[in-house]
Image 1: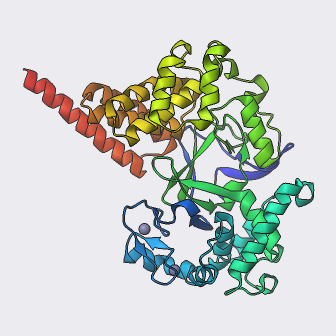
Image 2 (image 1 turned 180 degrees about the vertical axis):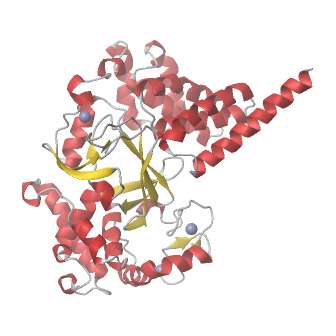
Image 3 (image 1 turned 45 degrees about the vertical axis):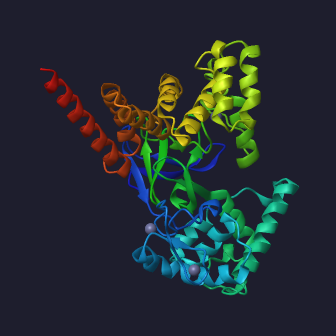
Length: 422
Ligand SMILES: [Zn+2]
Ligand SMILES: [Zn+2]
Ligand SMILES: [Zn+2]
């Protein structure tokens, strides 16, 4: 465990982590590789199965024809883990197991030391007996799939001496993996895979957490986004924090089976602001959200119904974000920049602490401004991104290196512009 963190029993929440000394905002608390990880099912063709880099063309494993790699080096390094997986994948073709099944199998193949495995096995899971019938059935299906998938390599899990006794049953192993897996995201905060980081599984949830997780490849970094006093509990958010109290609570109940009593929930902080404007005016935005995909819907809605709705309204913000994504996709840069700029003050309002989502949004808008030669604005946006990302990502993260290069380019262009004016 990192020196400044200690395990404790958090009242009403079970195990947790707390600060053993004062922690400054932006401080790096944990930096660790996963016990096991795997690329998301929907991205198996797009992401390197070893380093999780997204590339247009990847080298394919000639045996299972499924695993893909940047190059020979990644493929070679992955072989110790992939060797047994490769056989299992071939045995199951044309079917392809879900993420949690592949992740559970990888945990067995990873040959982790008994002690590390014990740490994973000691993690809390939702009590299977209190689980709704539907969820239990889902887990049993995953467990049968895991047994089928492992068959070639591990015909009988209960006889595996390398696996900790408490995980020698497919159902309990799968349940532990499902309860403790983290979604791994890339520099743009897009999902790339899932991984197990037992030391971080102890972190409890808060809707305004004092820590953030950021990934670099498969490595995770945990940083403080608030100053934390000794004895104070460390928290992360399990869900997207930019949503209404009611929706956050429902999601936490459904997915994690607890009722959140954090300060933000108890005070229903910012709910009123997120629903600002006349309900009749923002209702069409809310109703259209689930069906929206194309830019023309977004821009039509924003100009028709959205005109009367304040920018702070949550549904308007979500649609503006979708319009930004769609315009980028369609390479309509001017439009994209306009939508992006509109979201920034709202993001600042709803992310009072440094948050990766806010930093990356600033970075996206800065890139658009830079590309469209609004250099002064771009530089200003990049500076704001810097203030957030230095705390959430730290100075050495590739996203920061990219940001610094872009800021330097902007500064040169500004200097060049001003010197050519004289
Ligand atoms: Zn790679
Ligand atoms: Zn293979
Ligand atoms: Zn809460």
